[in-house]
Image 1 (cartoon, one colour):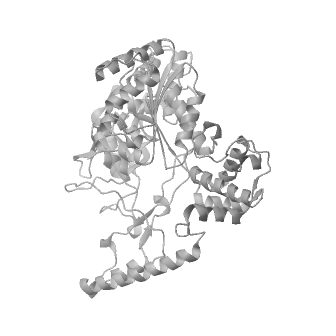
Image 2 (tube, one colour):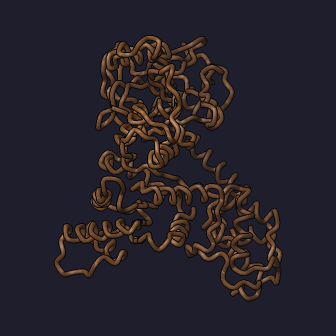
Image 3 (cartoon, helix red, strand yellow):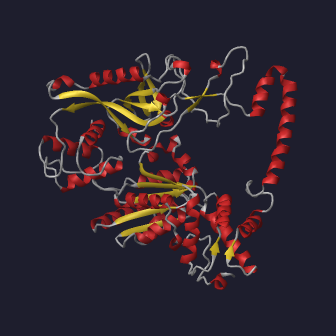
Length: 569
């Protein structure tokens, strides 16, 4: 209605996923780069998640438009399908032969495999993109996992992109889909736009629609748009579209804060407005709810007994007794990672003062409770600095044979690395990982009862988790979920440094080069073990470095060697 009036060629705030309108905020650009990287490097599985309306579908449509003709694509936007319907749709999208009535699942897969091999022989690639993947059934997800087995000795024949809402992450982390989840090496969670991106987003869409700058949103209008949308692109589109319609009816070309607030009221209605826009209504409602809650608690107290009066009082006031980590207990990342974070730990009930004495403490933000610990017999799995280091060197001596090297050639050192939790399954040597949110087991307290840094000591990774060493030196089985929920990224292991070992660079040759090439082959980076550091080895080293957040310079230095050592048999 208003497009021609404002001089637009089309509606600038349509809710359809038009890739021409993709606004590459920092988050959207990173997500786009992850998609291109996973496809071009043939990583097999790529997962993009995000909330409703954050732009996942638009991003995927834009991706398909950037791929060259050598890349065959299949887009599936209806996730409510069976495994047979999935195979049939993939073959139809890719143009694989003609469908024959009565085809079996094996027939579909064989036809697809022949097509993919032929495409690969012409240096082509294939991409399967499934939108709204959180709606896929477990049977279909298992079929998708089996499709990832279509590969050569060197490369994946089809790259599978799963795009879905945040529930997709929870779905993939379920125990029944562990085999699929462990194959996913490229992931990105798409966040809403930042506040300072809203103006750029709105102006970008106005320009793409053909605007000549005659429509202006005031600063107050943009702030109101962000307050309502919280950076969600779909909600921004909705309120901007309504605001332009109101401005059209008023014969205005400047969109004010008042116009945006009227648009929000039209969309949401008076009751569902964002609290900051309807503060008076919100305060009245909260006050009424508080009175009802108080009355309910009084009734509970009457039935439950007056002995719980202090607990009820604390619940009403919202006071939470917490204890803040000391300076030396704060997690200090390695240079090049994100800045330090302050840890705040809840005080266990058994550490409160006796006789119901009140503990003076400032009100702080509530902190989420730690993940539930598995049942452990006897001793704790959480070790302090000294016990974890001693155990780590003890495990090294039991497994390795450092005496096989001359004393002047090798010395043992502690190698530290910051690894993503999903990478632990590739570790072959004993290691320790710092616990993300330290527990408070007996004996791991410093002065004042504050928790000290603690670690999990892992002897060996298993198919379902790992074998950990407890404080008594005994082995205990721990699950994968337990490891992931306590993972603090800071990982350490013992590494036998060689005094005379030089960095390996392109053009070198010798047994050290062969060792690197063999290790790369073991972990999935194919290169012929010739002993010569040539072009193919150089590219595989750079891929390895990039995958694990090392400096991708193709130089096999101490950090690259240390990580390769951990991943070698």
